[in-house]
Length: 153
Image (tube, rainbow, N blue to C red; front, side, top):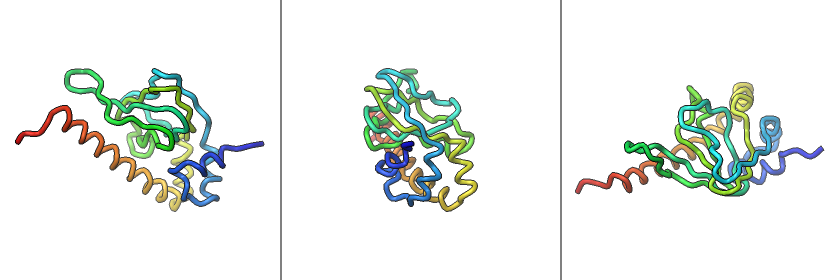
């Protein structure tokens, strides 16, 4: 029986993770496909997973004060979608929509949190990777705000 372990090992996010750690995570993983235009999640909903994008593009969107969506960032092959599964209260901070047909590996957040509780070193390794992603998303949101609202000079 073939597992998703080789695919996880090839993804840039997990490339440096030790094989035993990958073996633990594979039990939390599954293949998913989103058709173009599909809403993957909405801001405020329960965040129960994250996604390793293998193909396609996903737009992260936020509502502007005028109540229309603003694309904060577009993610593609080799990138990670979602970090909210890691931080209480486990609610999404953005909307995510598939721009193209998107294939990904979904990792179940509850399963991952249990693995991290059992193995704090693994939890620390994942936290370091997600801290980098959170910083990138914060910077992207900041740049988008500057584009929308400009600067006072």
